[in-house]
Image (cartoon, rainbow, N blue to C red):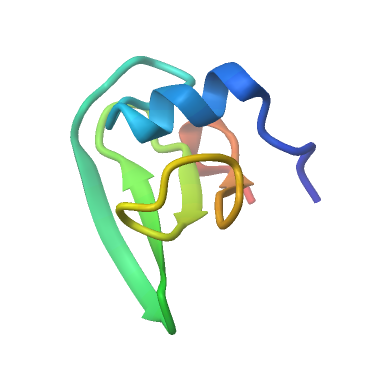
Length: 69
């Protein structure tokens, strides 16, 4: 399990940026309910989030840079 996202990381995701590399391209993965898994096209970090919902609710990290699970 990964630590909770910091306020800065949440703000970066809200702005459409990867909190690890600053990239702005994300690849969509599996969807479930309102959530979608996304992977940064630059560094490979993965997140689960609710698109369009600002703030920390509904956002979590599911892997670190490089895609390591």
